[in-house]
Length: 285
View 1: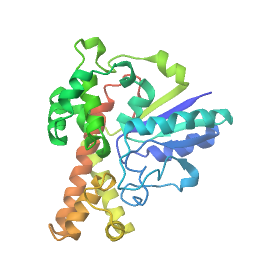
View 2 (view 1 turned 90 degrees about the vertical axis):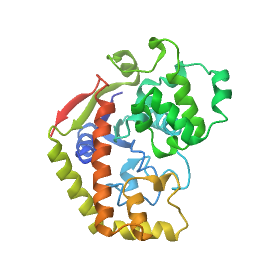
View 3 (view 1 turned 45 degrees about the vertical axis):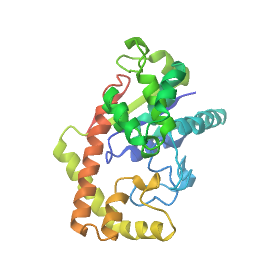
């Protein structure tokens, strides 16, 4: 049974393409956006579909950690269940770390290094992040906010990247078609902006739309429910900037400017990670 994957930069129309392909191939959508797995984070994260039309929306509350490892544990049986009903699973999202672990499963091939773990276990989260950044800046940037602040996840990433030989390090520098075929991946689509100005314009338009839809009220509602800016889900772009505005730390215009700039930076990082995966067939907009 086929498995379709749609990824790419933010604001590129991934969901619209996924819906189109779902109609064409009798498919069911599976989200792999690390921001959309959180409950109550709806407007700013751009949940464009009701939960009845896509799997793995609204899995956990914003105060809970949800890592790429947790995602794989949810996604794998779901993919098989959809296939068992004769449907086509269609993965759609922009969190490449989720996708990399799901499709290539690099981490399980690296055995535990208990001596290294003993050294790392006494370090703070900031120290672990610094050490991981030295090994791979891309890897740290590619982690979702839950992973970045979870010592166990940081230690595992350091452990994997600290293997002594380059062959053991997890890279996708060439096609790994055998593994993708095993999963049944028949279409692996990436959508990107060729022009950075077009990317900036699209994100600027999207942020304005989110504000019009009630982004500020959404953040106020979350704070009223007792969620904090330090919670894993609340460390998401858009929420952090509006929290600072609501608390009076910055003005409204500055909050919007920071939100927009951070989204643009995030979109650029997305492509930096994804372009190393030679299995992706790119579509330019």
